[in-house]
Image (cartoon, rainbow, N blue to C red; front, side, top):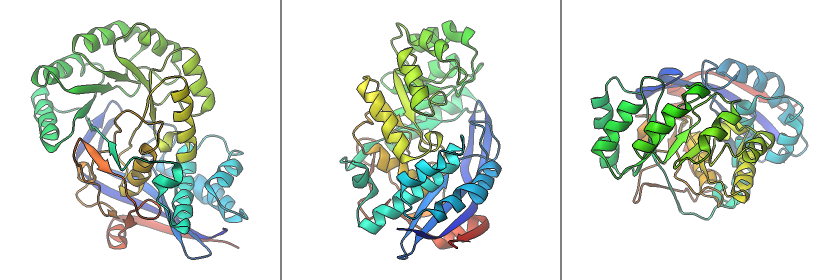
Length: 372
């Protein structure tokens, strides 16, 4: 099915509370939405998770807007059959820009599943009715506030907590949380904040306080440093930013730098690449899980569908809709349920609908592209 039109919206949603990582503090999240429409009138939605500043990766809202408007959307509109796969193959000529590509690729997945009257989860091969999730907790002003916040999330029903860490905010907060909650499934995420020379210190406090997983402590290209940390460790060493495609995953697997894989749809270029990477990791006996990037309900729905598939065995960073936003863009909301899980939508496509009233309230700009 050819595309009739593509709409590119820029949206800004206020966060319930500031979210701080080693990159900085976010109070509001500005991002792009892609809406595709095929000639039969069926729509599909995707989200570009690139942030305002190129801190997590080299992409930003501005660079993603340009490549989508000037290259990727015109390319998609010219395709005689605009499927996620045909778009992915055609877009390979443009290097990088995976977050921008993922926005269109996921919208095409949603469109196709809706046209077929199938849920996106089932279309991807998912069979789980619910997916296990955990909550990511940003850097807090004080250790005491961190402990209280973790307690509130546990009271809400979350069973796994991931703490953001950085040099100067690591052993003390981790120790305090572990003392208060001795049986907690505790992960940490550094977002590349440490030099490889810090491996000994990280290993010491991670083992002392029974951290189950240490995620991306070193810069993305420091694969051998991650391999050295993983050797003999009694915790998983998870790679995030280091793995963006099949080649980088192969390097990580061969060097034994990865004992857990974080698959973010935006980082790897879409649902298809994400599913492929997780499958390759599973064949090497490396468990995978789906990571989040403060997505609205649009991106969260894609993430939940992916997390319902077989390769993903660890709890995902896909908390409920009310974790970040008082007013999300989609309905129905994702609600934390029994066993720290989210229900996988069963309706056509992502199974959620964009609420146009809310979208108009928070939309900063909009541009529609039509087939010639």
